[in-house]
Length: 143
Ligand code: SF4
Ligand code: SF4
Image (tube, rainbow, N blue to C red; front, side, top):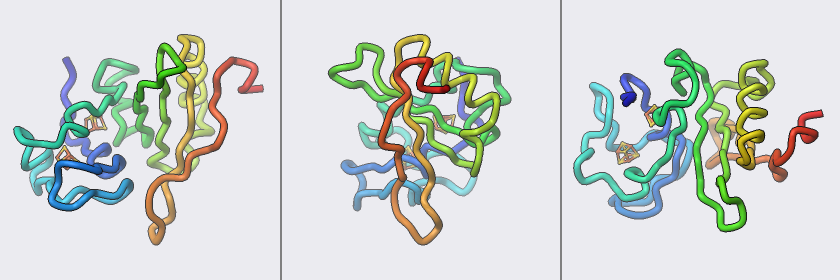
């Protein structure tokens, strides 16, 4: 089983609607990130945080593709019409969606039946993520 180590990418990337004093918008660091790394309220963290599904933590890809190192976070979300669910590819480092490695990973995920969507980090003055409207659902979508 992997551990997050120094990565805290999802604690900035994800939005947390319930369970915190005030909802946390996506794309801003959580106030509960501890100075020495990790979650300062880990044992009582919100359900949304508990159920967050990071594919790297679940074993996808090599160790060196940890989200903070690769600059990409692969997030799984269930979907009622897609048996395997959705993968949101959150681009933490500009341009990574065009890298050979990330394109290869996206194709492999589509081959396994996931629908894959890309979400770009907003500019610093913005809020939230900007998600491409269409999903990659078949290999010809990459042509
Ligand atoms: S993005 Fe993944 S590896 Fe990084 S802190 Fe979140 S769960 Fe851990
Ligand atoms: S509450 Fe903890 S696990 Fe949830 S986003 Fe904040 S730091 Fe991360």
